Image 1 (spheres, rainbow, N blue to C red):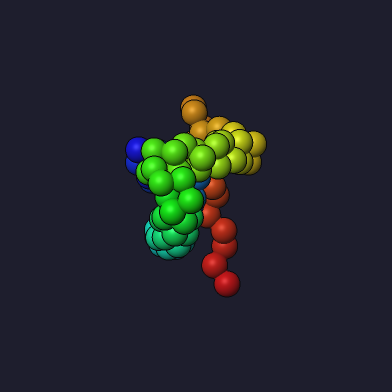
Image 2: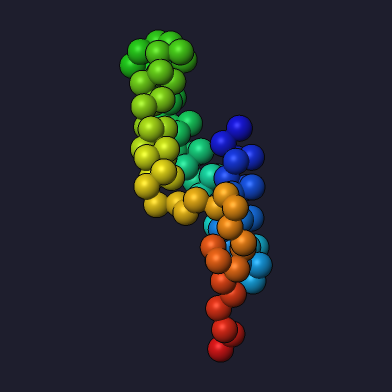
Length: 91
């Protein structure tokens, strides 16, 4: 569910010229972080003996993402793309 939100939000906060690059970086980050999460969850499963318990321990980490999003991502409601992410001059 979070990927749907991030995809939509990513289309709003990046200028058209940078949208594909941002999308690629988001995908690469999802792959790397997802792999790390699976490794950590597997290690916790080995210690706890339960997928539910190991996932429950990892859930608070998601709060960090929410706090970062609320703190650092701009509000886009009612604003034009040019205001949020203006195109930069090409060199």
